[in-house]
Image (spheres, helix red, strand yellow):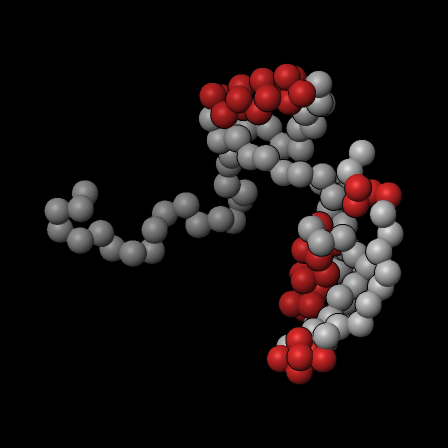
Length: 114
């Protein structure tokens, strides 16, 4: 157990010198990783209608690891197996373009490129 897990420090006010140098500094009770990420997505849409925005995702506050090759997938599987951790698959390879995606370049190739 780490000391920071059981020591509760007294809440103090921000130093006036720090406050004067950083006006408009805010914080929240969301976690510093996934919660802040989701909040930043909502901030990017503000001040519009935020009621239609999904505030969570399939992975939630879990980590994301992407594998593009079988070798990378084997590395992920081996590492988590060694740790005794379960691998959760959200999407299996290979990737593909959805219908409606432009699959040819609109740019004309220059001489010598082909």
